[in-house]
Image (cartoon, rainbow, N blue to C red; front, side, top):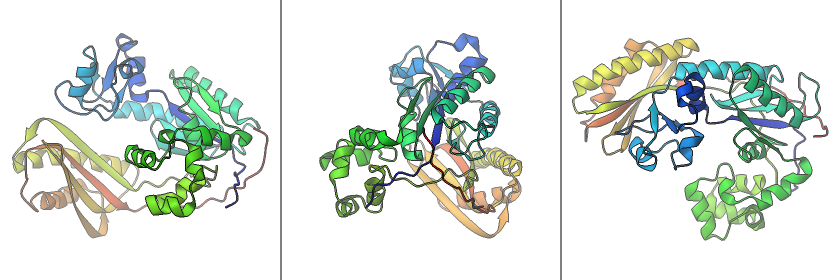
Length: 360
């Protein structure tokens, strides 16, 4: 396969410890201290951690109990998602002053295609610096950025000089950069796949590149083709400014485990109301309702039902959820309940992007 690199200029902007940084910005008493957003020292899961907390091994997705054990001085803060969305909107507004090709991945990160940008600046590196400075001046937070010829390399590069830094991987540096890259840092290669690659003698990009397509497909299935291409700098995924929402969800972790379906229904009414609010905000409706149940032993179960019509009303959602709740007996007490709506009424719009070659 020919090793071609598309002549695009992609910036991946990643906010630094976003949720935690917003809390520290809004509350001066939290600045410079180890904080965890979400969870508690008794239960729950950490959603984000400040850099001061990360030094002690506190990170997202670990239990609050473990986080407190790692860092006894840790301060737990309740998440304020409305505030995070407000800040995220301000940041995205800055992005759109540079290009209409913005693909948000979450509230705190996005891809920007600045091949043809509104500022007429041929340097993606200088644009990234300017965007990061504007975020700091206008919002008060720091951001890191990766700049390269495709989304894959830009995403990896944004993690190199965190926090408050950036890295550019120029077109002529991409292949060497990927060959020297530890396999665990390849975006899309998780912990399990990393271990499997280690067992196959693949530790860096250069070993991955030495494997044939047949070998990679044999051991990694369809993902083998992806690994074969990206290590050669081939990743043609465009920045999709019309990123399609595939599902909308709301969930809640309880301070005390629930063992009665009656109490669960009371909680599900609140969750359904929150879901309805989110659906109406974006004018969405869906056909597939899913009830998520996480038990006290952390095992998880989902129950779904697909309707022949779209719904968004909390009353209708709740009726289906009740049906799913009573579908079978609970196997244990419940620590989390969630409702999601998928199979949405969204239609994908297609854009044609003209790629031109410029100097980086």
